[in-house]
Image (cartoon, rainbow, N blue to C red; front, side, top):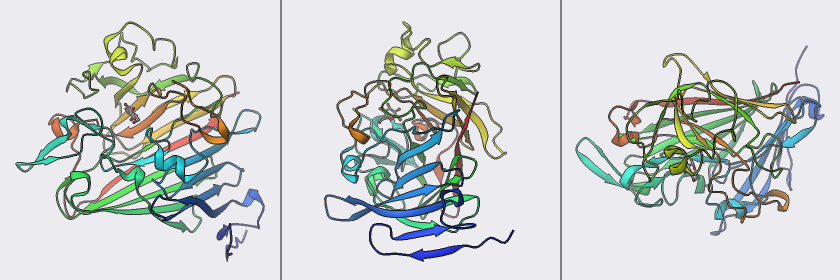
Length: 382
Ligand code: BGC
């Protein structure tokens, strides 16, 4: 079949539509762009709506590169939005939970907000007690990214780029970052991260979607069944900084090697669960370093049949059960998000790696290319 591709540029709310295959029906897939508001200093912010051939839809803003909504079918084909978020750019400007955001330059915590490279100490802002969290006070989640709609290949693709300047939030080197989101026709949201630097630096990029496979705003996630492909996890201290130990999950509430309800053990009287207020830990993924993406985790929501598989090239995943959500922030469509009404599976290198010589390295040197891939694959179980 000969495929036609049309590029139509409109002015107004819908500025650009790329139509693949046979026409403008949802079944052909499309990407549209509309205004999502402005930053406090007046920069316009956009919302891109990616719709695949089956009608699944990902809305992504160039403010923080955040996934705003993700609509996927249940076992009866009914779509629901399975991520937490806000209705306008303002929500993301004020957000403290990193809803859906691209996180960098260093996802997760760096202890005492400092690290050494080649004998020099770099000091970062302390935005989480004594520590640095998710890139600092103005991390990549607060940046306006440059967006480009890419030609259709494996699905609907959007490229975001951002230059993080030498010294930004205390990190060395001009870091050029590119993130490509693709919503495939098989209901996968694939994220490809790349970066280069002109000075030795540290990089750990991730995506911070909060999932609720029954639909955002529909209650807690304690009944979701979770499997994580990890034999070990990295226990933390009171400030949630890894102690350096890789601890066996066997015989602990961190053993998700077989599918287990998230809530089955979450309130057990166990030191690590108490420190995290639930799960807020990095799992050491069972994967071979040199192959492409491996399965990291699988989550099933029994009432709707929705399934999420997380595949990644990364060595770790932060499993976080939304313990700090407090139901006070208004979310999409006026709903609120109380504690544990979503979970995150943030693929990553281990927290505090710049200060942990035994953890896989997060150092990026000039001439090298940071390149990682993570896919959030949706399907259903009957
Ligand atoms: C961290 C949590 C933190 C959350 C929002 C997660 O990645 O592990 O401790 O509260 O992000 O900042």
